[in-house]
Image (tube, one colour):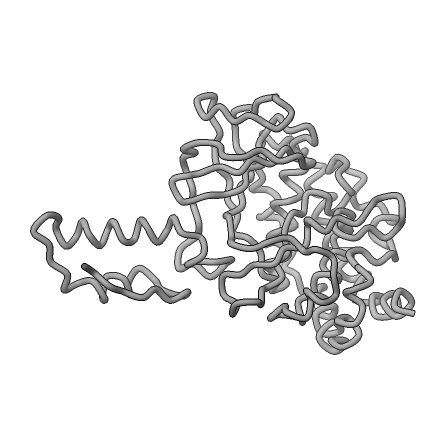
Length: 320
């Protein structure tokens, strides 16, 4: 019997070091190490969020597991790199939602927010991915997020007391306001708040505690509409509404005011060239035109400056 302990930050080199003396009459040492490494890579709880030594890179879908009723007809799937949540072409919300999710998640990571690991995976006809509507996913590049052990928020202030990263709550509101994310807590009453887009991860927290995660950004920038050349219009760039501010979040915004101010001041430092690279790498099948890509970059950069200059006053008004 082989007995071992697994740390959250265990890397491949550590696995090899700890098991280099293992011998077996049935399998070779190298095969045993390869098996252990493959097993670790399929266990999302050991390599949570962006902490993996190597990027999460699923290439094959073994089978669909469970469809969900979402804007992108999300389907839980099992891949060669473990389970994940797939947003595929053919969903009723359209391909631009995949593009918005990809770019916004990269922006959240740039801000320092914890996110799910994401990748682009190719769906084939042989995968037979069925949406909850009964329609089938179209072949082509799909957005996929790595599954993490956790749960969505129930809406109570008491739950938030157990968050181990409370400083990320105001940071999440700042992010939603910068990216105009109307699908967490919208700034008006025409759209209901979405508690399912506030995720608590268990993986690197003590029992009874959890880490809040920035997730599901399909409605950033234009609230689910097309990513087209209208994205950089002045009324969108200078939208002075606060997005993502649940009433239960307000005490955390007030108690982390200095962190919020520092994060807001960081926004204009975003590297436009890096952002252009992120946007230009969007798969062609997601159908964002060159004009739409340019307008998206313009909105993000121009709005970063506007938010940095005005957000503290805007937040003060929203908190009163």
